Length: 236
Ligand SMILES: O=C(O)[C@H](O)[C@@H](O)[C@H](O)[C@H](O)COP(=O)(O)O
Image 1 (cartoon, rainbow, N blue to C red):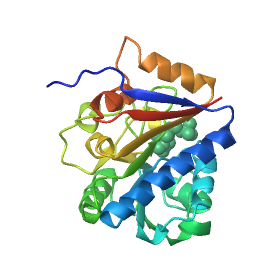
Image 2: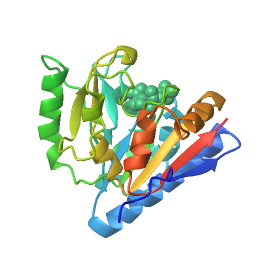
Image 3: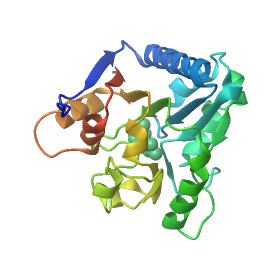
């Protein structure tokens, strides 16, 4: 039976950002623990940017079997980990510490001739991860992008193709700054638990706009393609 696209998301609002960080970290840790119990391993993908730092720090302190968890990125800027723009750098500084230091981190960036070459070698290298994702934590820009699915990306339809067999895709988008590497929508929506972590009134307004009528934004494409309810975590 065709699945009705009814904006399948659940809104989890919090009074402040520390409370959101603690709650989201608890949910993610619980899902990973369940995955480890069921299949002996957990696979987590986290987003970069400026929002996740508190959440990642809170998650790093929760004592689960991190040595059974593999963590990768939802997307990455095409910059080395030493760059202040690096999402791998954000994860290293905020998450790969405390209890979570025992997790295995799989970055997306590595030196390559260009973004297409990097994406192709990532695609091969990440095949061996224990797919599907147990947990994915997405962010969102006020333009309605999520992951590196920027509205002005070259070949956006390919990035948003739910039938794609790709794991990692290259992204070129004027609004993105650097070229990007992103998990495909297909891999993201196959996750057992899909969280969207947004903060501030501007992003709440942008999210509500994306869920309404009008031009379909990438975040809407992800929610519509997801076979499970997307859990939105928001604080002012
Ligand atoms: O590499 C990135 O930038 C992210 O993965 C991206 O998708 C992010 O989630 C949004 O751009 C929101 O970024 P902020 O948290 O900085 O607002």
